[in-house]
Length: 273
Length: 277
Image (cartoon, rainbow over all chains, first blue to last red):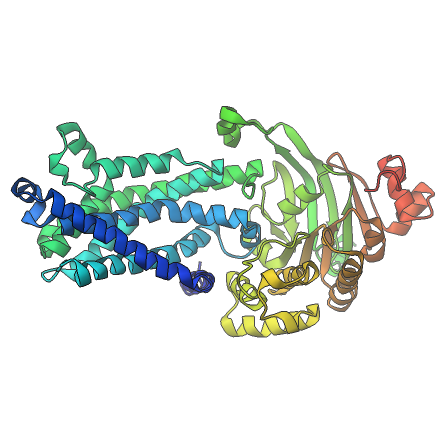
C-alpha cells in the first residue's frame, strides 16, 4: 500500500476526530480541571506519606509527588493503548459507520491505526496538562530531564503497548463486549508495574511478574529520563526491553487480529453490535 | 464463433457462480465464546449463479431470510462466502477485495452510518479520503455529486439536522463519490416516506442507470419500486434462485398481468395484499 496514501488517510482520521471533539469544547475545560484535581490529590498524598524510608526506596531518591505524577501520567498510555483500538471499533459499530468504512478502499488495520491517532494526541496533551499543573502549583521541577530520552521511551512504550491494544481489539471484534484480557493486563500492570510505588517494595514473585510486563520498563525509563536526567546509556536497557516486547507483540497481534477478522467475516458478525 | 463472441461481449459487471454461504447457529451465554469457531450449519445461500451485465438494473426480491442481504454483503466484501465465486468487474471479492471495492458503491436503506456532528461535506470528504481521493479531487467530486443528488444547498449542515430523505441522498452520494461502475443497494427506500421514495427512485433510474450507465443491483421488498427500476428481477427463495428474468418475462412465464402477481405465484405466497414481499 502506498505510504503517502496511508499518511493522508491517517490525517483524515485525525481531522475527523478533531472536528468531532471541537463540537464538545466544554469537555476540554472540564478535563483540564479534572487533571488539576488528580495532580492535587497526588501532591497532598505525597505530603502525607513522605518519610525518609520512602525517599530511600524511591529510585534516584526523588520525592514521592514527582514519582507518582510520572507514574500516573504515563500509565495512561497503557490504558489508552488497550482501549483506543477496540473503542474505535465499538464506536463505529454503535454509530453504524463500521460498515461504511469497511466498503471503502481502506483496510481495517489502517482504520484501526487512524482511529488511534487522536486519542494518543489527546493523551499527550493531557500529559502536558498534568505536568503543567505540577510545575505551576506543586513545585514539580523536571529541570534535569533528558527530554529526547523521554520521547524515545515514550515511542518505544507506545509500540509495545500497541501490540497489546491490537490483541485487545481482536477480542472486541470476536466477542463484541466485555474484554477480560484488557482488564487483566491493566489490573496486573497497575499492581506490579510501579505506577504508585516502586517495584522494589513488592515481594519476590511479584517483582518477577513485573519484569514480564512492558509498563514496568516504560515507567522506570520515563522516571529515569524525566526525574534523574539519565543519559542514553542508562536508558538503553528500558528502551531495548520495550523494543523486544514490541518485536514480539506487534507481529503476534497482527496474526491474531488477521485470524479474528477472517473468522468474523465467515460468521458474519463483524458489524454486529 | 465463440472467440468472436467473447471478444465482442463486454465482461459482466457482476458474476456469481455456485455461491454458497453458511453461518454458525447463534449462541448465547458461555457458548457464545465458541461462536467464532462454531460449525457453519445454517444455510443462507445454496449455490446460486447469475450474471448482471454492464448498465443493467437488477432487483433482488424474496421473503425475509431468503438471502438477499447476505448476497449483497458478500459482493460488498463484508462477509466471506463458504464456497463458490463472486466477482465485480472481474475482481474476485475474496481474492481481490480492494480491487472489487474500487468497482462498487454500497448503500443500505438506513439513515445511519454518518458522523452526525460533522457536516455532510465533512462526512463526504472523510469517506473520499478513505477511497484514495486527493483533497482537490474530493472537493470537485463532492460538489458535482451533491448537485446530482440535490443536496448541494445542505452540504454544510450537520448530518444530525438533515431529514431522513436528505441523509439517504448523502448516503447515495457517498457510495458514488469514487465513480463506481456498480452500485449495490440494500432496501434503498426502506425508511423513506412515499414521496421521498418516489424521488429517490427517479434519481436511481433516470440519473444513475439511464444517464450514467451505472450497473445497479438492489434488494427490495417494494414490488412497485422493482417494476419501476429493474430490467431484470432475481427472485431468491430459501437461498436459491427461484427465477431470474425481466418483469415482462416473469409475467409471461406465470401468466400474471402484474409483476406483483408473477412474484406471488413464483414465491407461492398467499396474495400480494395479505403478505407483501
